Structures are given as C-alpha cells and as structure tokens.
Length: 207
Length: 207
DNA sequence: ACCTGAACACCGTTCAAGT
DNA sequence: ACCTGAACACCGTTCAAGT
Image (cartoon, rainbow over all chains, first blue to last red; front, side):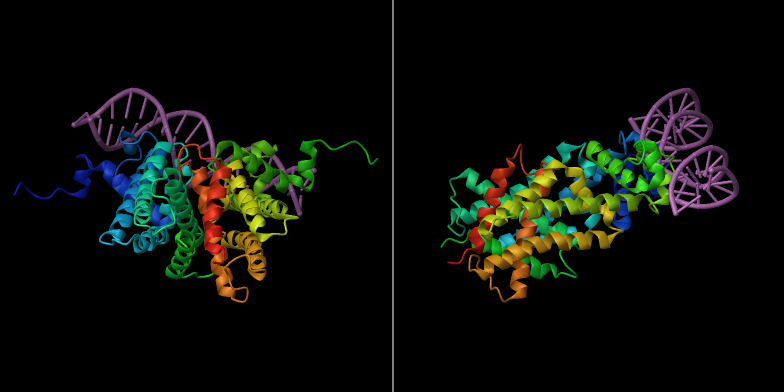
C-alpha cells in the first residue's frame, strides 16, 4: 500500500540496526558455540560498516549483554508456557525444570553467555533476569506449600526462599553438567530431569 | 651447593617456561575475572617474547585448558581433604559440598573457565576432570547407601548414579548461582550449603 | 630443543567527516 | 540522528633465524 518493501540494506539505515545486530550476534553465538567472534564480523553480517555498531552499543560487551537479555526473556517465556494450564504444583515443577534444561541443551553457548563471565561487568542484567527465573520457580513452590503438597511452611518466607534456591540450584547445575557433557556420556535429558525431580520431591513431600 | 641460584629469567630458559606460563595465566584469570586477556600479556608476565608460548602450547586455548586442568586438580584435592577423616557419609557430603562451593567463590573466573566455553574444543580435559569430581561424590553416596544412611539401593548402579548426579547438580548449580550473584543479594555460603544439604538429606533419608 | 624478531592479517575503539 | 573511511594501538599466529 505504502510503496515497495524496503530492502534489508535500506532498512538497516532506518532504525532496525540495533535489532539486526542482536540477531546477527545471536546467530554467531549459536553457530560458533562461543562469543569469541569479532564485533566486526557482526557488523559484516548486518551489512554495515565495522563501526556502525557503536551507534547502538558503547562497546562489544553491551551487545553481548543485549543478546543475553534476549535469552533470559526466552527462558522466562519457555518456563511460563511449560506450566501454563498445569494446576498441580507437583506437575508444574518438573515441566518447568524440563523447559529450563532444554533451553540450555538447545543453545548451550547462549545459556553460558547468560550466566557467564561476559556479564560480570553488567551485573544488573544478570541479576534482574535471574530474579525473573527465580520468581517463576518460587511461585510454584509457594503454591505447593499453600496446598500442603510440599513440606514447606507457606508462611515462612525464608523456608520458601531456601526451597526455591535448592530447586533452582539443582536444575541450573544439571543444565550445565549436561551441556558440558561432563555428567557422563550421552545422558538422556528427560530421564535426568525426572530423576532429579524425584529426589527433589522426596525432599519436599510431607511424611 | 651446586652454585648460585638461577635468576627467574635464567630459569625460564631452562625448562620452567611451561609452568611459568600456566601460573601467569592463572594469575590473570584471577585478577581480571575473565580469560579475555591476551597471550602476549601472559608472555610479558613470564618475561619472554610474545611467541615463546608457542613452544609449549599449540594455541591460546591449550594454555587455558592447562589452567583449567590445574583448577580441577585443586578442586579434587579440596574435596578429598574436606572429607578426610570423616567416616559418616551424612557428614562427609556437606563437608565436600562446602569445599566445592568455596573453591568457586574463592576464584569465580577459574571455576567458570573449568566448566566454560573455553574448553568446548577440549572435551577430554573437561570430561576426565569432571569424572574425578563425580567419583568423589559417588564414593560418598555409595558408602552411605551401603550402611543404610541414604535411601539408595547399594546394589543398583543406576540408582547410585542418579543420586550422585542429583547431588552434583545441586552443588554445582548453587556454586554458579552464588558466583553470578544471581541467587539473591549477599547470600551466606554456609547457610546456603546447609539448606541445600538439608533438602538433599530429606530426599535421601529412608522413611 | 627452545627462544627471538619481523611479518601478516586481523581486531576494538576513536574521530573527523559525510548524509 | 545515524553511518562511513581512515587511523591507532593492539592481537593471534607463522616463519626464518639465532643459540
């Protein structure tokens, strides 16, 4: 209606470069299993000169932080959609854990970027995003405690926090051990998550 | 007895350069909280020309892998000395976990290097070292199962492996969440480890 | 066997300039 | 406001040479 579609090259000159750079960087993280690629390579992929990125990010680390932030958003969406419609917290917890581990397995380099040293100088990003992931888990624990499905006092914030941290630690650690292939040869993700949750439940179940 | 002590500079020309490079790299990892430093900087610290490292490592990643291997050796020693003389597996497990988390807290960048993307292209290092860490934990679980202290069948290798992986995941994940300061503000390591172990024990205890 | 100097093709970042 | 080209000080890696 309003004229011919703009070419990609043209679009980059019209305000989409920031997004295009994040997408190109995400693609490189995924392909190279690492974030050691150069900023100039990202610019090349986006079809701009090697210093154009500096109009949108003050340095390379800021671009990586933006990629990580996008990863955290995806993680949150996956966790939430995994538990959507599951009322029983005892079922929601493993479903949520599976989504968490699977994101890591699907894109190990992105997962490591999100929780890795590239964000040491951008602690706001890691903290805010981590708080969101924790909130999803804590909500499940809270609901389980409220209906007596977990052996956690629903009125003790410190108990809820401790239980959430224990579960988060286990899920997070499993993800990284699987990613690192350090947890043994060719581990089956679903089985591992189930085993992990079984141990967690034994700990959480009232007796 | 056999003459004056050799100067450092002299020594590096006599076969210690490999070790000196690993030590310099470890110091840089510790100081910069990252392994983004240059190989040339490592060479400078060791007092040699920028290409001398290539006599000992085929590329930068191999030096980092050697640093990681040293880190894994330290981790193993810390875990073993933490449980030395503790007969009760119920006491050995938290002691071992504490040593694990504390190494990570003491040197976050080294810990992340050990389990990070720098070793993606050196999977032998990560796998062999990971297997050692796992073996220490598995031994404790096995002993606990044998005396009936844990609700794990001592004759089921798969149950032992699953329990070990669950515990390792929790300890590993807690370490990284604490390192990333993503687990909340100013978390107390000892309390966190105790809470974690309490949940693990509730899961492991026979009922 | 181990180390050095010169060289190559890169990189992150800055800056003056263009539109 | 956003992008480019030239420039700077660096880097990883290679290679011919030195001892």
